[in-house]
Length: 293
Image 1 (cartoon, rainbow, N blue to C red):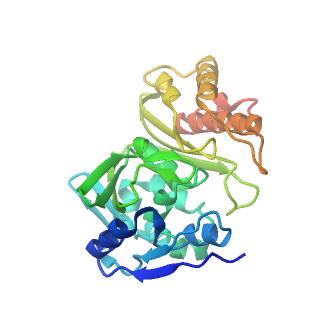
Image 2: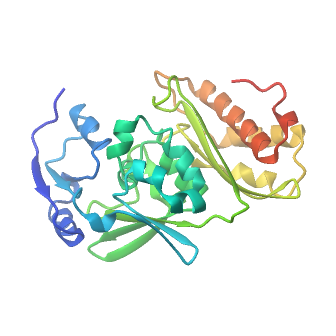
């Protein structure tokens, strides 16, 4: 299938891109790496009248660490995230997650900004933003707007961005050197869409969680920052405690069924990932006894 007819404009600057978005609004879509947008257009899931290509805006590329904050330009490609020494030091969760994004050809073209703006609920990076406490930076006619990651994702392919706004960067708090992370997803084959996945960031003190953020993906119409993780903070985690948290997580999930899995299967796999994550972060193999996918 081919995309419906559209006009094309190459933005010469961020200001020019904003001018085009202001003029065309909902009739336009922004093209970054094209790895999410173009397939959706070819399937005619979306049919924009105008494509605004921002791919040449080098001002939106790069990773910088300053003052305890990691800033990632929206056009930074997945492959560049994998190679970034700043990411390796300050947000290694992101590096692990990117390795699960599709295949090398996709990672060489796809961008972090495109992934977040597309807001596919099965994507890895939106869940990482929740786990890392990210702030999304957008620019529009009214200037710059900062949006917390847990307020950014609004539904399937929906975000808090207005039609006149452009995602320009992501800010992550640099993680403490003694922090820990966990990433795992279930998929039929490596590179396929995730059936269920989990990105987690944690601090462990004396065998207990001092902080724990769990970002689930492919469990509903958007990534989920599990509030039930709070039940694991500053307590001795036993199988009974973990079972209680699993039940609480189950109540948070609004899993959808599709050709890959039923809602019940997704809820089960989310509980499996929760158990494996906690067991791994606490180095407690006893917590995984009897758990299988």
